Length: 226
Image (cartoon, rainbow, N blue to C red; front, side, top):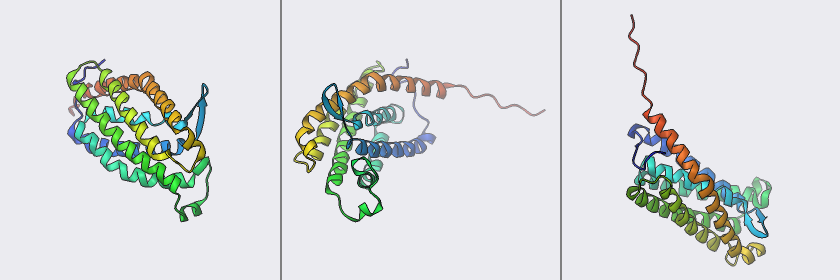
């Protein structure tokens, strides 16, 4: 596996990667805000489908810090957070409770969906900024490839989860979520952490190694015409 300081993305490709990452972050936030409205039961504990989608952002953020840098990773968050908030609200209203409610649903303000979108906004910003700080600090001090993404997931996701569920569902108008949000938050964190450590940290290593090999691949010399 590659060391923690083996490669840096060419500066000419940074704007393209930033644009792709902004779109990816917005898409995952939107998907997670929709999926968090769909409860599931695992081994007798309440959770939501959003627990399986949001770890994708932490994988993308850690790779961004590793390949482009901490400043650029923060730039992705800055560019993604407001569009994600607005589009999440629109999608949440249109597909509230898991089915399409028609475009006329946008004509009235849905405070429940807006609260979820606002909670996601706060949790996203706080969790991602902490993830970036922890990841960058550890990767500079250790050449063990998995340590930085693992530690960043532990700390980033606990802040993200606590912020999201407390803002979205404390004294919520949804009786089920108001009564069970603390349990759901704890189970959600355990699931996200397990998914991150068992799937996404290894995926981080595989993707990083692939990128390193691609960037180190020698280009073929130009053929001289006869």
